[in-house]
Length: 218
Ligand code: NAP
Image (tube, rainbow, N blue to C red; front, top):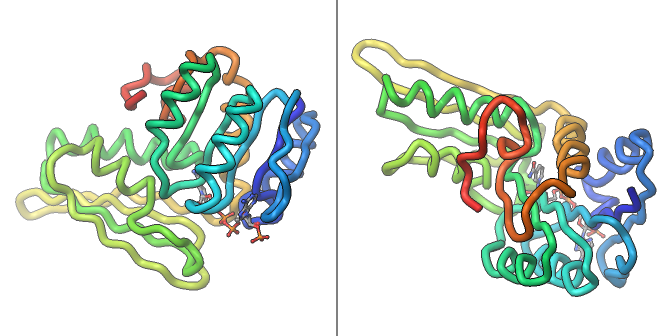
């Protein structure tokens, strides 16, 4: 496919670009300050900033290009509506790492038996938003008022623990991302499945995986 990669010089973008090329995609990298010229491309992928993401996605939709959004920290509902009206797909995953999706699923299953849960999310000091999109998505799926603790430190990539407390016991479900390469398989899967998704917003890698029907909000 011919794809635009917005934020191609960023930490995720620079890991993603070679993976896209290796998978046979033709990539047009678009960085900060460059025009969002995507007309005629098959899809656009945005891993930028919460400030840039919204305008980037709107510009892509206006050029009739479906979008895969990794950027967290900005609302997608109105853009999803715009995409639906235009007959375009807008896909967002709070976390493109397969293990993170499994962590969320396992946490939901465990919470039926151990309902007292708290989330600790740990990310690199440069991450702008807190709590992380993954932590918010996990909390929403666990239901109720689940406290989230956010840690930002150099040296970290992306990590999350869901701690579940019972009588005289705890269960910790932990996922660690050691390199941004972890996000590439999920983005490649989203590209592959893009033509099969309905117009409008689809949220969550789970919607694309075979192990479960999507229970994530559209
Ligand atoms: P990063 O290293 O700061 O990279 C952001 C990139 O966006 C930079 O290269 C920046 O360019 C570029 N940029 C800024 N404004 C732009 C614009 N208007 N158009 C095009 N490019 C623009 O951040 P990152 O770690 O790669 O993360 C990017 C985003 O993805 C963050 O929101 C992060 O939370 C999210 N993320 C999501 C997932 C997921 O699985 N969903 C995983 C990891 C990260 P300059 O270098 O020129 O400033």
